[in-house]
Image (cartoon, rainbow, N blue to C red; front, side, top):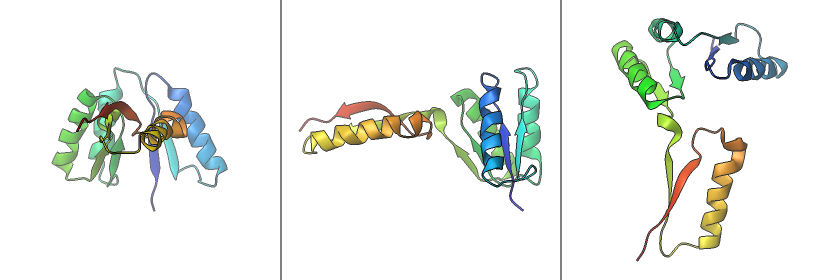
Amino acid sequence: RNTIILKASVQCPATHHLIGGFLIEAGLTPGEINGITNTSVDGPVEVSTLIEHPAHVVLKFTGSIDVERKIAGMAVGQIKPLLLALGDKVPFVVLYDDDLEAAFAAAAFGAFSHQGQDGMPPNGCSLASQ
């Protein structure tokens, strides 16, 4: 049986609590969706415990590059699939012969769809010359 564990950020634990509540309203049951909060002191221990637990077979993390490096190192040791957002830095490149109006509309959509919370909003726009 698949489950989800939301480990809340120290900066915004209430956000993850709300997300968990919405998922329960949508039909998941407690146990299918679980939430964890921590302090900045006990966070590394909790993360290590989550990664090392044998029932956790796939990991997904969004956060700082420094923490993602540590998590990647732990996941490799466990030989577990891992998806990292890598700091949410996504370039948006426009080539010289692109339709500029369409390109900038796509950039705006990418930046503001899902209120920028999709993990891949364009971080900058580069226009390549001929």
